[in-house]
Length: 139
Ligand SMILES: [Zn+2]
Ligand SMILES: [Zn+2]
Image (cartoon, rainbow, N blue to C red; front, side, top):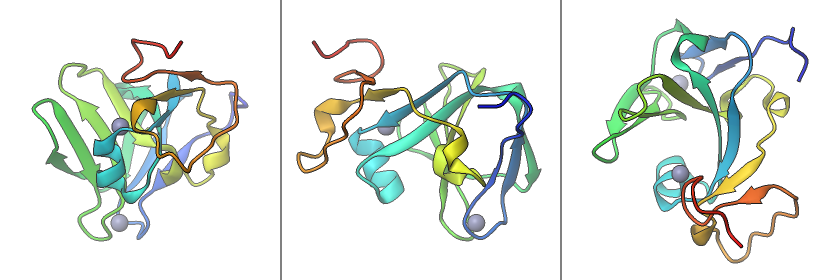
């Protein structure tokens, strides 16, 4: 992605808007059950930032405590799933690639929780795959 391109995004209704400085340090496909249920899609694409890269320019997500450490952000008005934070990593802020005004600007480079990937979905790429989080690689 071009370094000069500014990333911007919003929820479906536009009540929440953000802008990003710089580029994500990671971007991934997540196949975990929590993301599937929460977002309503069998695979979810996330991009990861340092917290100071993210500026909310219009409102902010409400957060749902989906587990002890995880806060999943959504728009209270339209229900869009837009963010993810883990209190064990307070410097990181994760946003959905789909919420970008131009989602083609950020390309995911690895898959996590492929143990939960639905059987009918085949994704033909050379990305690294991890059975669970990005710790144990599928061999
Ligand atoms: Zn909204
Ligand atoms: Zn997930």
